[in-house]
Length: 223
Image (tube, rainbow, N blue to C red; front, side):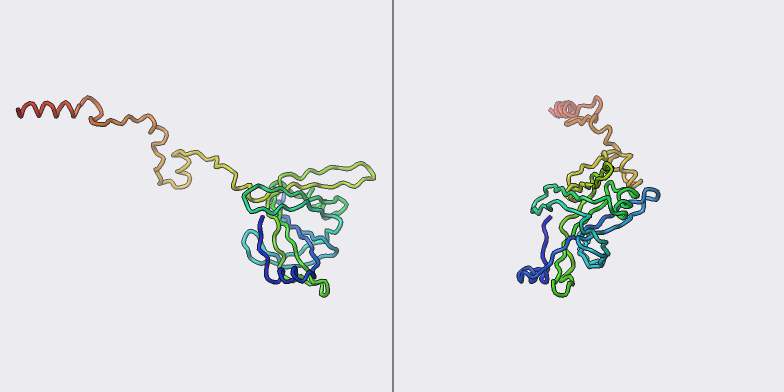
């Protein structure tokens, strides 16, 4: 995805006095109720609450992120200016009880993923501006592998960018029944099933009446 940079972030980049940190936000589902469940991590220690720019609305929202230092790894996030569908992988370590609860206790399939980057002032350790979005998409796969004894297991989440939605086709068909579901009074597709069988008569009325022959007969009587 492409992005703009705020004036505060741009000034910090120009001064080359920044400490970058990444943030990831998950929206998954409760397996029983289907209600959305949110969880977030950042690439440092401790828990922190920061402002981020919501990629869906463009508004600034405050979110709390748990420590993900050493537990969360991201693949490179492609930056493109076209509609190419981008894929990002996120690796989560199963040594964390919180991460285990996220991937095992909830339904992650088709959940939402948002990745942000925040720039911090190294002196004050305060973020200079709301963290900007680097990626927004959905979870395609989140396989859980149980490692052999004595080894560390990871969960690799494969995410697809939101541009994937532009590639989907509409499975609905043009039928009267389908249109009536949207509006019971809309009869636009009433005859769509039979219109291809209609016969259009040009120059004469349907049946046996021939207007051309009738005209010739009337013209003969005049002379």
